Length: 465
Image (tube, rainbow, N blue to C red; front, top):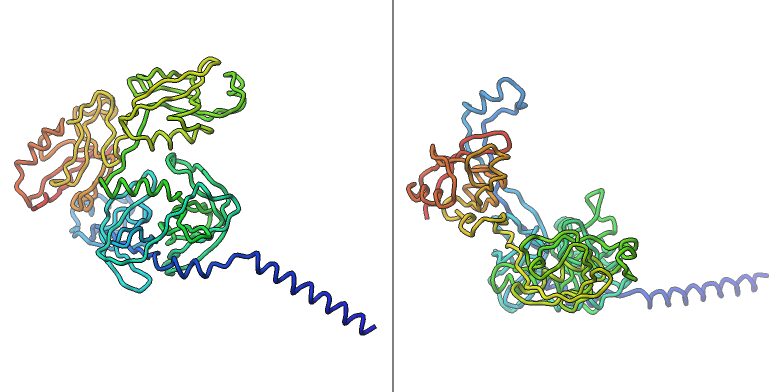
Protein backbone atom coordinates (compact mmCIF):
# COMPACT_ATOMS: atom_id res chain seq x y z
CA UNK A 1 0.00 0.00 0.00
CA UNK A 2 2.80 2.39 0.90
CA UNK A 3 4.59 1.64 -2.36
CA UNK A 4 1.45 2.37 -4.39
CA UNK A 5 0.99 5.68 -2.61
CA UNK A 6 4.63 6.51 -3.18
CA UNK A 7 4.36 5.78 -6.87
CA UNK A 8 1.18 7.84 -7.13
CA UNK A 9 2.77 10.83 -5.40
CA UNK A 10 5.84 10.57 -7.57
CA UNK A 11 3.63 10.55 -10.63
CA UNK A 12 1.77 13.64 -9.50
CA UNK A 13 5.07 15.38 -8.73
CA UNK A 14 6.44 14.52 -12.17
CA UNK A 15 3.26 15.83 -13.79
CA UNK A 16 3.48 19.06 -11.78
CA UNK A 17 7.13 19.58 -12.74
CA UNK A 18 6.35 19.01 -16.42
CA UNK A 19 3.35 21.35 -16.26
CA UNK A 20 5.42 24.04 -14.54
CA UNK A 21 8.16 23.65 -17.14
CA UNK A 22 5.67 24.11 -19.98
CA UNK A 23 4.16 27.19 -18.31
CA UNK A 24 7.62 28.68 -17.81
CA UNK A 25 8.32 28.32 -21.53
CA UNK A 26 5.04 29.96 -22.47
CA UNK A 27 5.36 32.99 -20.19
CA UNK A 28 7.40 35.86 -21.71
CA UNK A 29 10.71 37.04 -20.29
CA UNK A 30 11.01 40.84 -20.27
CA UNK A 31 14.48 41.10 -18.75
CA UNK A 32 16.42 41.45 -22.00
CA UNK A 33 13.98 44.05 -23.34
CA UNK A 34 14.28 46.16 -20.19
CA UNK A 35 18.07 45.90 -20.11
CA UNK A 36 18.41 47.03 -23.74
CA UNK A 37 15.68 49.67 -23.91
CA UNK A 38 15.34 50.98 -20.36
CA UNK A 39 18.15 53.53 -20.70
CA UNK A 40 16.21 55.40 -23.41
CA UNK A 41 13.31 56.12 -21.03
CA UNK A 42 13.50 59.36 -19.04
CA UNK A 43 11.81 60.96 -16.06
CA UNK A 44 10.30 64.39 -16.65
CA UNK A 45 9.55 66.79 -13.80
CA UNK A 46 7.91 70.17 -14.39
CA UNK A 47 7.47 73.28 -12.30
CA UNK A 48 4.76 75.87 -12.80
CA UNK A 49 4.83 79.16 -10.92
CA UNK A 50 1.39 80.03 -9.60
CA UNK A 51 0.67 83.66 -8.77
CA UNK A 52 -1.72 84.38 -5.92
CA UNK A 53 -2.70 87.40 -3.90
CA UNK A 54 -2.17 87.32 -0.14
CA UNK A 55 -3.91 89.40 2.47
CA UNK A 56 -7.59 88.63 1.83
CA UNK A 57 -9.30 86.92 4.80
CA UNK A 58 -10.97 83.59 4.20
CA UNK A 59 -14.54 84.87 4.00
CA UNK A 60 -17.47 83.61 1.94
CA UNK A 61 -18.57 85.93 -0.86
CA UNK A 62 -21.91 86.48 0.83
CA UNK A 63 -20.28 87.81 4.00
CA UNK A 64 -20.92 91.58 4.46
CA UNK A 65 -17.19 92.18 5.11
CA UNK A 66 -16.03 90.27 2.02
CA UNK A 67 -16.37 93.24 -0.36
CA UNK A 68 -14.75 95.59 2.15
CA UNK A 69 -11.63 93.44 2.51
CA UNK A 70 -11.53 92.79 -1.23
CA UNK A 71 -11.37 96.51 -1.92
CA UNK A 72 -9.23 97.84 0.91
CA UNK A 73 -7.16 95.03 2.45
CA UNK A 74 -3.46 95.10 1.42
CA UNK A 75 -3.00 92.41 -1.20
CA UNK A 76 0.61 91.54 -1.97
CA UNK A 77 1.37 89.15 -4.85
CA UNK A 78 2.63 85.74 -3.79
CA UNK A 79 4.24 83.01 -5.85
CA UNK A 80 3.73 79.30 -5.33
CA UNK A 81 5.32 76.44 -7.21
CA UNK A 82 3.22 73.59 -8.58
CA UNK A 83 5.18 70.48 -9.53
CA UNK A 84 4.22 67.42 -11.55
CA UNK A 85 5.88 64.30 -12.92
CA UNK A 86 5.77 62.41 -16.18
CA UNK A 87 7.78 60.16 -18.45
CA UNK A 88 9.27 60.33 -21.92
CA UNK A 89 11.71 58.61 -24.23
CA UNK A 90 14.72 59.63 -26.29
CA UNK A 91 14.00 59.78 -30.02
CA UNK A 92 17.51 60.61 -31.22
CA UNK A 93 21.02 60.54 -29.82
CA UNK A 94 21.31 64.34 -30.01
CA UNK A 95 18.69 64.92 -27.31
CA UNK A 96 15.21 65.01 -28.86
CA UNK A 97 12.61 63.55 -26.50
CA UNK A 98 8.97 62.63 -27.02
CA UNK A 99 6.31 62.86 -24.31
CA UNK A 100 2.67 63.89 -23.81
CA UNK A 101 1.67 67.50 -24.34
CA UNK A 102 -0.25 67.51 -21.06
CA UNK A 103 2.93 66.56 -19.17
CA UNK A 104 4.62 69.88 -20.08
CA UNK A 105 1.54 72.07 -20.49
CA UNK A 106 2.02 75.52 -18.85
CA UNK A 107 5.37 74.44 -17.38
CA UNK A 108 7.81 77.23 -16.49
CA UNK A 109 10.67 74.78 -15.91
CA UNK A 110 11.20 71.29 -17.31
CA UNK A 111 13.85 68.91 -15.97
CA UNK A 112 14.75 65.64 -17.68
CA UNK A 113 16.52 62.97 -15.64
CA UNK A 114 18.23 60.04 -17.34
CA UNK A 115 18.68 56.56 -15.88
CA UNK A 116 22.33 57.40 -15.13
CA UNK A 117 21.03 60.22 -12.83
CA UNK A 118 22.17 63.06 -15.08
CA UNK A 119 19.73 65.96 -15.19
CA UNK A 120 19.13 68.46 -18.00
CA UNK A 121 16.94 71.51 -18.45
CA UNK A 122 14.67 70.90 -21.41
CA UNK A 123 12.96 73.27 -23.81
CA UNK A 124 9.74 72.57 -25.66
CA UNK A 125 10.25 72.33 -29.42
CA UNK A 126 6.54 72.00 -30.00
CA UNK A 127 3.37 70.55 -28.52
CA UNK A 128 0.13 69.42 -30.11
CA UNK A 129 -2.84 69.22 -27.77
CA UNK A 130 -5.10 67.53 -30.28
CA UNK A 131 -2.98 64.36 -30.25
CA UNK A 132 -1.34 65.05 -26.86
CA UNK A 133 2.18 64.81 -28.30
CA UNK A 134 5.12 67.06 -27.39
CA UNK A 135 8.77 67.17 -28.45
CA UNK A 136 11.48 68.35 -26.03
CA UNK A 137 15.18 69.04 -26.55
CA UNK A 138 18.06 68.68 -24.10
CA UNK A 139 21.66 69.72 -24.68
CA UNK A 140 23.31 66.31 -24.87
CA UNK A 141 24.82 63.92 -27.42
CA UNK A 142 25.55 60.22 -27.66
CA UNK A 143 22.33 59.29 -25.87
CA UNK A 144 20.63 55.89 -26.05
CA UNK A 145 17.56 56.02 -28.25
CA UNK A 146 14.47 53.93 -28.87
CA UNK A 147 13.64 51.89 -31.96
CA UNK A 148 10.32 52.68 -33.60
CA UNK A 149 8.01 49.76 -34.35
CA UNK A 150 4.90 49.34 -36.48
CA UNK A 151 1.70 49.52 -34.38
CA UNK A 152 -0.32 48.32 -37.38
CA UNK A 153 1.27 44.89 -36.91
CA UNK A 154 0.12 44.65 -33.29
CA UNK A 155 -2.40 41.90 -32.63
CA UNK A 156 -5.05 41.89 -29.93
CA UNK A 157 -3.81 39.60 -27.17
CA UNK A 158 -0.14 40.35 -27.87
CA UNK A 159 2.17 41.07 -24.91
CA UNK A 160 3.34 44.67 -24.46
CA UNK A 161 5.51 46.41 -21.85
CA UNK A 162 5.45 49.92 -20.37
CA UNK A 163 8.40 51.66 -18.72
CA UNK A 164 7.94 54.94 -16.87
CA UNK A 165 7.82 56.78 -13.57
CA UNK A 166 4.44 56.12 -11.91
CA UNK A 167 4.08 58.33 -8.82
CA UNK A 168 7.76 59.26 -9.31
CA UNK A 169 9.16 55.72 -9.07
CA UNK A 170 11.72 55.86 -11.88
CA UNK A 171 12.17 53.06 -14.41
CA UNK A 172 9.16 51.05 -13.28
CA UNK A 173 8.27 48.17 -15.60
CA UNK A 174 4.73 46.86 -16.10
CA UNK A 175 3.39 44.39 -18.64
CA UNK A 176 0.09 43.28 -20.12
CA UNK A 177 -1.61 42.57 -23.41
CA UNK A 178 -3.18 44.56 -26.20
CA UNK A 179 -6.88 44.66 -25.34
CA UNK A 180 -8.12 46.44 -28.48
CA UNK A 181 -6.95 48.62 -31.36
CA UNK A 182 -8.36 51.73 -32.98
CA UNK A 183 -10.25 52.88 -29.91
CA UNK A 184 -11.97 56.25 -30.22
CA UNK A 185 -12.23 58.30 -27.02
CA UNK A 186 -14.49 61.32 -26.40
CA UNK A 187 -13.01 64.52 -27.91
CA UNK A 188 -10.05 62.61 -29.36
CA UNK A 189 -10.99 62.38 -33.04
CA UNK A 190 -7.46 62.23 -34.40
CA UNK A 191 -6.02 59.29 -32.44
CA UNK A 192 -6.92 55.59 -32.93
CA UNK A 193 -5.80 54.54 -29.44
CA UNK A 194 -4.23 51.22 -28.52
CA UNK A 195 -6.06 49.85 -25.49
CA UNK A 196 -4.09 47.64 -23.07
CA UNK A 197 -4.41 46.21 -19.59
CA UNK A 198 -0.88 47.32 -18.67
CA UNK A 199 -0.77 48.96 -15.23
CA UNK A 200 -0.50 52.68 -16.00
CA UNK A 201 -0.63 55.27 -13.21
CA UNK A 202 0.00 59.03 -12.81
CA UNK A 203 3.61 59.63 -13.82
CA UNK A 204 3.55 57.02 -16.60
CA UNK A 205 2.13 59.61 -19.02
CA UNK A 206 4.44 60.17 -21.97
CA UNK A 207 6.34 56.92 -21.47
CA UNK A 208 6.82 54.28 -24.17
CA UNK A 209 4.80 51.15 -24.86
CA UNK A 210 7.07 48.38 -26.21
CA UNK A 211 6.29 45.26 -28.20
CA UNK A 212 8.19 42.07 -27.45
CA UNK A 213 10.83 42.96 -30.03
CA UNK A 214 11.81 45.98 -27.92
CA UNK A 215 10.28 48.46 -30.37
CA UNK A 216 8.15 51.41 -29.28
CA UNK A 217 4.63 51.02 -30.65
CA UNK A 218 2.87 53.71 -28.59
CA UNK A 219 2.96 56.51 -26.03
CA UNK A 220 1.07 55.82 -22.83
CA UNK A 221 -1.35 58.70 -22.57
CA UNK A 222 -4.61 58.04 -20.71
CA UNK A 223 -6.27 55.68 -18.28
CA UNK A 224 -9.88 54.96 -17.42
CA UNK A 225 -10.23 54.98 -13.65
CA UNK A 226 -12.69 55.57 -10.86
CA UNK A 227 -10.06 55.51 -8.13
CA UNK A 228 -7.27 57.61 -9.67
CA UNK A 229 -5.11 54.51 -10.15
CA UNK A 230 -4.88 51.70 -12.67
CA UNK A 231 -8.01 49.66 -13.35
CA UNK A 232 -6.67 47.69 -16.32
CA UNK A 233 -7.88 50.19 -18.94
CA UNK A 234 -5.03 52.19 -20.40
CA UNK A 235 -4.69 53.89 -23.76
CA UNK A 236 -1.61 54.59 -25.85
CA UNK A 237 -1.11 56.85 -28.87
CA UNK A 238 0.14 54.74 -31.82
CA UNK A 239 3.74 55.65 -32.49
CA UNK A 240 3.15 56.22 -36.22
CA UNK A 241 0.57 58.91 -35.39
CA UNK A 242 2.94 60.43 -32.81
CA UNK A 243 5.90 60.37 -35.19
CA UNK A 244 3.99 62.21 -37.92
CA UNK A 245 3.14 64.91 -35.40
CA UNK A 246 6.67 65.01 -33.98
CA UNK A 247 8.22 65.43 -37.44
CA UNK A 248 6.07 68.50 -38.07
CA UNK A 249 6.82 69.92 -34.62
CA UNK A 250 10.56 69.53 -35.18
CA UNK A 251 10.47 71.14 -38.63
CA UNK A 252 7.94 73.95 -38.12
CA UNK A 253 7.00 73.99 -34.42
CA UNK A 254 3.34 73.35 -35.24
CA UNK A 255 1.05 70.82 -36.88
CA UNK A 256 -1.09 71.43 -39.97
CA UNK A 257 -4.16 69.29 -40.60
CA UNK A 258 -6.67 68.97 -43.38
CA UNK A 259 -10.40 69.59 -43.16
CA UNK A 260 -13.27 69.50 -45.66
CA UNK A 261 -16.09 71.09 -43.68
CA UNK A 262 -18.65 68.37 -43.02
CA UNK A 263 -20.48 67.00 -40.01
CA UNK A 264 -20.74 63.22 -39.96
CA UNK A 265 -22.48 60.50 -38.01
CA UNK A 266 -22.16 56.75 -37.63
CA UNK A 267 -23.92 54.70 -40.27
CA UNK A 268 -26.07 52.11 -38.48
CA UNK A 269 -27.38 49.00 -40.17
CA UNK A 270 -30.85 50.51 -40.24
CA UNK A 271 -29.57 53.68 -41.91
CA UNK A 272 -27.51 51.63 -44.35
CA UNK A 273 -30.60 49.70 -45.33
CA UNK A 274 -32.59 52.89 -45.84
CA UNK A 275 -29.90 54.25 -48.18
CA UNK A 276 -29.64 50.99 -50.10
CA UNK A 277 -26.21 49.98 -48.81
CA UNK A 278 -25.48 46.31 -48.21
CA UNK A 279 -23.08 47.00 -45.29
CA UNK A 280 -23.01 49.79 -42.65
CA UNK A 281 -19.59 51.01 -43.78
CA UNK A 282 -18.78 54.65 -44.35
CA UNK A 283 -19.45 58.08 -42.86
CA UNK A 284 -22.91 59.60 -43.25
CA UNK A 285 -22.93 63.36 -43.99
CA UNK A 286 -25.42 65.15 -41.74
CA UNK A 287 -24.42 68.73 -42.67
CA UNK A 288 -22.10 70.53 -45.09
CA UNK A 289 -20.40 73.80 -44.22
CA UNK A 290 -21.52 76.46 -46.65
CA UNK A 291 -18.59 77.63 -48.77
CA UNK A 292 -16.34 74.92 -47.34
CA UNK A 293 -14.17 72.50 -49.28
CA UNK A 294 -16.79 69.75 -49.40
CA UNK A 295 -19.50 72.20 -50.44
CA UNK A 296 -17.35 73.45 -53.32
CA UNK A 297 -16.69 69.85 -54.36
CA UNK A 298 -20.42 69.11 -54.54
CA UNK A 299 -20.74 66.91 -51.44
CA UNK A 300 -24.34 66.83 -50.21
CA UNK A 301 -26.21 66.01 -47.03
CA UNK A 302 -27.14 62.27 -46.95
CA UNK A 303 -24.06 61.31 -48.97
CA UNK A 304 -22.11 58.40 -47.48
CA UNK A 305 -18.33 58.71 -47.85
CA UNK A 306 -16.91 55.26 -48.60
CA UNK A 307 -13.32 56.15 -49.47
CA UNK A 308 -11.16 59.25 -49.04
CA UNK A 309 -8.02 59.53 -51.17
CA UNK A 310 -8.28 55.81 -51.84
CA UNK A 311 -8.43 54.89 -48.15
CA UNK A 312 -11.54 52.96 -47.05
CA UNK A 313 -13.83 54.53 -44.44
CA UNK A 314 -15.04 51.52 -42.49
CA UNK A 315 -16.47 53.62 -39.68
CA UNK A 316 -17.29 57.29 -39.28
CA UNK A 317 -14.38 57.69 -36.83
CA UNK A 318 -11.95 56.86 -39.65
CA UNK A 319 -12.79 59.97 -41.69
CA UNK A 320 -11.54 62.75 -39.35
CA UNK A 321 -8.21 60.95 -38.87
CA UNK A 322 -7.64 60.38 -42.58
CA UNK A 323 -8.70 63.90 -43.59
CA UNK A 324 -6.59 65.46 -40.84
CA UNK A 325 -3.53 63.54 -42.04
CA UNK A 326 -4.00 64.87 -45.59
CA UNK A 327 -1.85 67.82 -46.60
CA UNK A 328 -3.88 71.03 -46.85
CA UNK A 329 -4.10 72.30 -50.42
CA UNK A 330 -3.91 68.85 -51.99
CA UNK A 331 -6.64 67.60 -54.34
CA UNK A 332 -8.04 64.17 -53.52
CA UNK A 333 -10.90 62.00 -54.69
CA UNK A 334 -13.86 61.16 -52.47
CA UNK A 335 -15.78 57.99 -53.30
CA UNK A 336 -19.31 58.28 -51.98
CA UNK A 337 -22.73 56.71 -52.16
CA UNK A 338 -25.55 58.97 -53.33
CA UNK A 339 -29.16 57.95 -54.01
CA UNK A 340 -28.36 54.32 -54.61
CA UNK A 341 -25.27 54.78 -56.79
CA UNK A 342 -21.52 55.27 -56.48
CA UNK A 343 -20.10 58.69 -57.26
CA UNK A 344 -16.64 60.25 -57.24
CA UNK A 345 -15.93 63.93 -56.54
CA UNK A 346 -12.65 65.82 -56.19
CA UNK A 347 -12.03 68.08 -53.21
CA UNK A 348 -9.29 70.59 -52.44
CA UNK A 349 -8.48 69.96 -48.78
CA UNK A 350 -8.58 73.02 -46.54
CA UNK A 351 -6.65 73.52 -43.31
CA UNK A 352 -7.77 73.26 -39.70
CA UNK A 353 -6.76 76.51 -37.95
CA UNK A 354 -3.79 76.04 -35.66
CA UNK A 355 -5.13 75.72 -32.12
CA UNK A 356 -2.81 78.47 -30.92
CA UNK A 357 -4.74 80.78 -33.23
CA UNK A 358 -8.40 81.56 -32.60
CA UNK A 359 -10.97 80.16 -35.01
CA UNK A 360 -12.25 82.92 -37.25
CA UNK A 361 -15.98 83.37 -37.58
CA UNK A 362 -17.45 83.65 -41.04
CA UNK A 363 -16.87 87.08 -42.50
CA UNK A 364 -13.86 87.97 -40.34
CA UNK A 365 -10.69 88.91 -42.16
CA UNK A 366 -7.20 87.89 -41.09
CA UNK A 367 -6.54 91.23 -39.42
CA UNK A 368 -9.45 90.79 -36.97
CA UNK A 369 -7.50 88.17 -35.00
CA UNK A 370 -3.99 88.37 -33.66
CA UNK A 371 -1.50 88.21 -30.87
CA UNK A 372 -0.34 90.80 -28.36
CA UNK A 373 2.26 88.44 -26.91
CA UNK A 374 5.17 90.89 -26.77
CA UNK A 375 3.13 93.51 -24.95
CA UNK A 376 0.38 91.78 -23.02
CA UNK A 377 0.81 88.06 -23.65
CA UNK A 378 -2.66 87.57 -25.10
CA UNK A 379 -4.19 86.03 -28.21
CA UNK A 380 -7.41 87.90 -28.97
CA UNK A 381 -10.12 88.12 -31.60
CA UNK A 382 -12.77 90.68 -32.42
CA UNK A 383 -16.33 89.91 -31.42
CA UNK A 384 -18.95 89.07 -34.01
CA UNK A 385 -22.27 90.93 -34.17
CA UNK A 386 -23.98 87.99 -32.51
CA UNK A 387 -21.42 87.93 -29.68
CA UNK A 388 -21.79 91.69 -29.18
CA UNK A 389 -25.55 91.29 -28.95
CA UNK A 390 -25.23 88.47 -26.41
CA UNK A 391 -22.90 90.62 -24.30
CA UNK A 392 -24.99 93.75 -24.88
CA UNK A 393 -21.74 95.54 -25.69
CA UNK A 394 -20.73 97.94 -28.43
CA UNK A 395 -17.21 96.57 -28.78
CA UNK A 396 -14.46 94.52 -27.19
CA UNK A 397 -11.90 91.81 -27.86
CA UNK A 398 -12.33 88.18 -26.83
CA UNK A 399 -9.31 86.55 -25.14
CA UNK A 400 -8.64 83.25 -26.90
CA UNK A 401 -5.43 82.33 -25.07
CA UNK A 402 -3.26 83.69 -22.24
CA UNK A 403 0.42 83.24 -23.13
CA UNK A 404 2.39 85.85 -21.20
CA UNK A 405 3.41 85.45 -17.58
CA UNK A 406 2.25 88.97 -16.63
CA UNK A 407 -1.22 88.41 -18.05
CA UNK A 408 -1.49 85.02 -16.37
CA UNK A 409 -0.25 86.46 -13.09
CA UNK A 410 -2.89 89.17 -13.29
CA UNK A 411 -5.53 86.46 -13.45
CA UNK A 412 -6.71 86.89 -17.05
CA UNK A 413 -8.44 83.85 -18.50
CA UNK A 414 -9.55 82.51 -21.83
CA UNK A 415 -13.08 83.77 -22.48
CA UNK A 416 -12.57 87.13 -20.79
CA UNK A 417 -13.53 90.18 -22.87
CA UNK A 418 -11.32 93.28 -23.02
CA UNK A 419 -13.74 96.24 -23.12
CA UNK A 420 -11.35 99.15 -22.69
CA UNK A 421 -7.75 100.21 -22.22
CA UNK A 422 -7.70 102.91 -19.58
CA UNK A 423 -10.80 104.97 -20.28
CA UNK A 424 -10.83 104.28 -24.02
CA UNK A 425 -13.30 101.70 -25.26
CA UNK A 426 -11.78 99.29 -27.78
CA UNK A 427 -13.39 97.97 -30.96
CA UNK A 428 -10.59 96.48 -33.04
CA UNK A 429 -7.18 94.85 -32.78
CA UNK A 430 -5.65 97.69 -34.77
CA UNK A 431 -6.98 100.23 -32.27
CA UNK A 432 -5.59 98.23 -29.33
CA UNK A 433 -2.15 98.05 -30.90
CA UNK A 434 -2.16 101.82 -31.46
CA UNK A 435 -3.14 102.44 -27.84
CA UNK A 436 -0.45 100.09 -26.52
CA UNK A 437 2.22 101.87 -28.57
CA UNK A 438 1.52 104.97 -26.49
CA UNK A 439 2.28 103.19 -23.21
CA UNK A 440 5.99 103.26 -22.26
CA UNK A 441 7.76 99.96 -21.72
CA UNK A 442 7.71 98.77 -18.13
CA UNK A 443 4.60 100.80 -17.27
CA UNK A 444 1.27 99.43 -16.13
CA UNK A 445 -1.77 99.45 -18.36
CA UNK A 446 -5.33 99.15 -17.05
CA UNK A 447 -7.66 96.78 -18.88
CA UNK A 448 -11.39 96.83 -18.34
CA UNK A 449 -12.31 93.14 -18.29
CA UNK A 450 -15.70 91.51 -18.46
CA UNK A 451 -16.02 88.00 -17.09
CA UNK A 452 -19.52 86.60 -17.08
CA UNK A 453 -21.74 89.29 -15.61
CA UNK A 454 -18.90 91.04 -13.78
CA UNK A 455 -16.77 93.93 -15.04
CA UNK A 456 -13.55 95.17 -13.41
CA UNK A 457 -10.22 96.78 -14.22
CA UNK A 458 -7.04 94.73 -14.10
CA UNK A 459 -3.55 96.26 -14.23
CA UNK A 460 -0.81 94.59 -16.26
CA UNK A 461 2.82 95.66 -16.50
CA UNK A 462 4.01 95.79 -20.09
CA UNK A 463 7.07 93.81 -21.12
CA UNK A 464 10.23 95.87 -20.69
CA UNK A 465 12.13 94.02 -23.41
